[in-house]
Every structure is written in C-alpha cells, then in structure tokens.
Length: 524
Image (cartoon, rainbow, N blue to C red; front, top):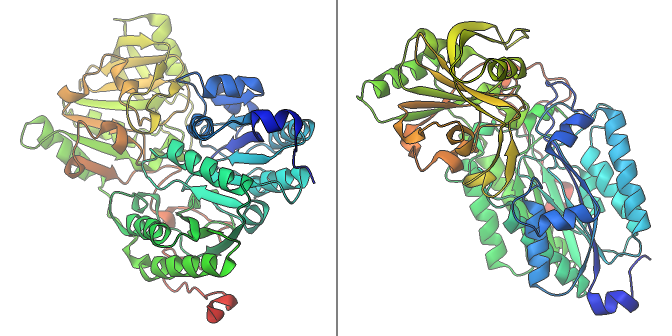
C-alpha cells in the first residue's frame, strides 16, 4: 500500500500526482516524433505547477482546470510528473513512447508515497509498437501506486477507450462539448471525484463499446445524434446520485484500431456496479438505435466555389468553409490545395484561407520581406494529397506565429504557428495565411494577427474540421458554415480509406453490422 499518512501530508493535504499524454493518432499520417512534443508541450516537475497557476500557457486546458479546482476545494500537495502533448499526427515512434513512459515511471516511483493520481490524456494515442499507449500508461500508474490509491482519468471525447484503461482507473470523465470548450470543467469534475474518493467514497465502473464509428462531422454537441446522447448522459447523472459520471465517447476512427468505436463508460458511487451497468446499457441502446442518424452531406468543391462566388457578389451573406479532408486537428498535414486552387482559378474575390502549412514557402516569404512580389510555390515536394500549386503572389505581412487565443477551444491558451506569412495571390486577390508548424485553424487570432479583418471577408476557408465553430461563430452563424468534401487524411467519407485494423463489420461502413448486448444485460 502506497497511501501517504501523517506528517507533512496531514498539514498540507493529500499528495496528488499529475501526468498525461496528449496525442490524437491518425494511422494514415507520418509517425509522431519527439520534436513534435517538444514544439507543442513537454513539461515536467515543478514547471507544470508554475505554468498551471501562472495564466496563459501551452499546457492542455485540463491541467490549469484541475489545479484551480483542487486549490478551491482544500489543501493539497501537487506532485507534477510529466505532461507530453503533440499535435494530432501519426502513431508515436515507439522509442519516443518508451522514453516518455520510462521518465513518467521513474518520476512517479520517486514521488511515492502518494494519495491520488490524475491522468489527463487525450485518449486516442497509439504508437508504432503499442496500439493501446493510453492503456499502457494507466496500467503503469496502477502498478506503481498500488491498488488502493485513487486514480482518476479524463479524456477527449474523440478517444479510443480500452478495457485495460477502464480497469486501471477508479473514475473516468470525458469531454462533453464539441467544439471542445469544457476541458477545464471536466478536469474540475475529476478533482471533485478525487476528493470524494480521498474521503472514502468507493467507485465502480461499467464499459461498453459499440460497432459504430460515426464520421467526425456527426459528433457535434450543439445538436444532432451525438448531442442527444450527451444530454441523455447528463440527465442520468442529474437524476441518479449514484451515477458519478456517464461518458459517451465518439472515438477517433482514423486511429484504425480494434478499440475504435463509440464507447460508454460509467462511474458509479458506492461501488454500485449494477447501477453503472444499467446506465451504460441504457446509453448504449440509445446510441445503437440512433446509428442511422450519423449521416451528413458534405458540399462538393464546385458547390463551395459557387456559394463563395454568390457571397462575393453580395447575393448571400459571408460564409466559412471547413476544408474537412485536411484537418491538422485530426492528423491532416494542412497542405492540400484542392479548395485553394479551385477558388483561385475561379477568381472569387474577398476570400481568406488559413492556415496552409508550408515551412519552405513561409521561410521564402520571410527572406524576401513584406511587400515583395514573387512566384509562390505551394508544396514544392508533392505527396499523395498535397499537389503543387504555383501563383504570382505578394507578401502582405510577416509574423513569428506566436499568439494567445481569445475564443473557443484556444481561449487563453498560447499557440505557435512557427514563422508565418500572409500572402496575396495577385491574379485572384485570394489571401492565404501560411504557417511553418502544423496547427489547426480554429482560433480567429491565427488570421487576425496577420492583419486580416475577418468581418470584412466574404468567404473564409479554414483547415479545421469542427473546432473553428467555437472560435468563428461571432462572424458566421450556423446557416453560413459549410463542410467541404475534400481529399486528405481526415476525410469524413470513411469509404475513402484502406482500413487495416478497424474491427469489421462496423457501422456505417458496413450497414449489416450488428451489436450483441453483453451477457450481464439479461440480469439487470
């Protein structure tokens, strides 16, 4: 038993370790490297506490939220271990994961004895040699701290939950908003659950996975099938005090793993596994019954160009377009030119596109300087989806790419595009924000910092799947938000991919897919 007692802990509160691994792994993208973590967030030890309590930082939003709630609810001793976060990309290079887990294990073991642990992970990571890196992390924590120390975990709702992870933790909470604006709230919920367990509360869990992999564009929480499931989960928590948390996670299908699929994870107080199972079964049945609702028509590129043209002529209100097939927030490279080329060739005025990821082009713009005219070559080195596009251009603005978000998912958080530039394609007038680091354009400041007046644009194209909605909704109402069917590593059209590890049959790829309820359902 590793529970701390007496001495310093008695006067300064429980010793709680904080650690986490943030990566959304797209199996079709290049592997994630150590540099990817170093360029976004790799914080350890007391640096984590300093950043968490110090205002805007590059930490995942859960970490300041957890610290804030723990500070509000009593004395405690943070034991910060390691927070590693990288932008969505391919599976982690196995040696990198091994190094991260080894460092976490060493730091965690050196911190014993502990009273509790908070694991703040995205939940959709994998590695080139480990399909369940999040489960591996949770199991490692449990092995080190022992069976009696409370362990609580939070995940993104785009996570792929494993049985091993659920067995390794005492309580689980996932985001309930998409676009994600509740990271701090879910971390606070984890803090409250941990406080309950430190006071003696016992938790039980129930877990179900369905053969259902909804396209990412149907997992919004303002309305639709997934929103209804989240509201039902919240209603169950409100109606039954035994239900400490009910999480319905949509999963991240692009991980292409056996553990992909919509999952229901319920944590119940009093060690009441029957209550947890009943709630989980209720939610799973609703999800399966509504599986046919997970369908959404995307615009063709030609349709998007025509809408932008009408907006430019003043016949319709300004519009914003999601380049849905190339979302860096899901592992896309941020450099497909299909929509960019179509709008440029159509000579649609008043269009702004961001952020196009092309380090070589950004570097050339910086070398030439503001005001320079040159032949802008997008994607000098071509790949399957990222084709070359050349056009006469002018450098309008140059920035270092560093900023602090002001709305939505990035509000109050630091971001870094790397050296960046605003280019104007002279033949069409189309303006493009070009960045050096692969980042999703879901924050208005990413355009505004380059001098773009978003309110004056007639059409905006963002390399983002859905999170931009929470950042750009002050400019574009729901009726003027359009998702475009573009080629890329994050296409919502699941039939476009050559799946290798995804469990089949699975809906909607396989309309005949069936779900069998667990054997224990008959006894409820």
